[in-house]
Length: 294
Image 1 (cartoon, rainbow, N blue to C red):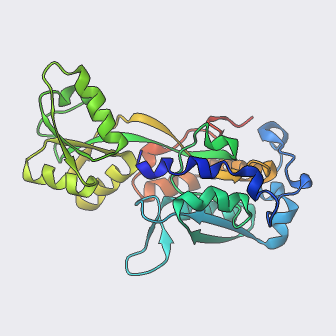
Image 2 (image 1 turned 45 degrees about the horizontal axis):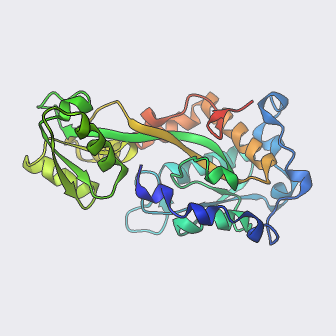
Image 3 (image 1 turned 45 degrees about the vertical axis):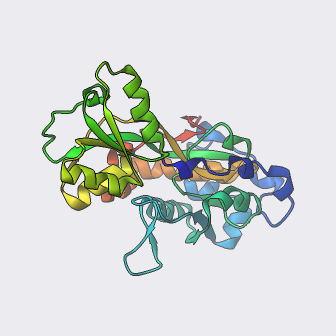
């Protein structure tokens, strides 16, 4: 996972300080029903009245992590997995979709302060964050091995990196994956450190390194866009990314979970992920806080 996914957890837990302002939640909006009680209701039926009255679903993201969230080339229009999936969820809820770009460390405090309704920004569903928000999990991602097209070294797993030259981004969780593996290697790998994933790929291009490890969705994007690399299927240290919703607003949480169920059923969810080459990162069922929605 990219380091940005773990920024400012302390800030995310500022629950009471931000609870009083302009949020949409009220006691009538937070009586979450769960999947069993909502089986005969549509996502649109489950939208809390306070949100329904506004007619819009306000989504926040933090641009700069393609293919999850980025600007269309030459514009300030947000696109990517998160904006596109957010728009599909809003449609299921019968609401107008609006999206705001904000600093990553301000996303959860802004959610609690009522500036937006949900956050979709490649955010890891962690126990610490669940102190402030609930997550409807929509993505599963970890580090994936990238090699030159055709995989000339025949690399299949982390074990095959032993004794080889590998390039990994400084300070990344993927560097930690490589270093942990190197401890197990009888013949140690040579680990080069790059500033980021793109510069690391230059080392593959030049033959200075035979493999790298990159966050799976980013790896698939580079492979798709360039045609120069293969991405191995296994993910390492994989974990769920979730749609964050204020913990006080379980009604909206259930509506979003139901929208996800509808998108999984009608193929809309798969279509969004496939558009960006990240179908392998799909979750197979609706998950809330990493557990099946029941």
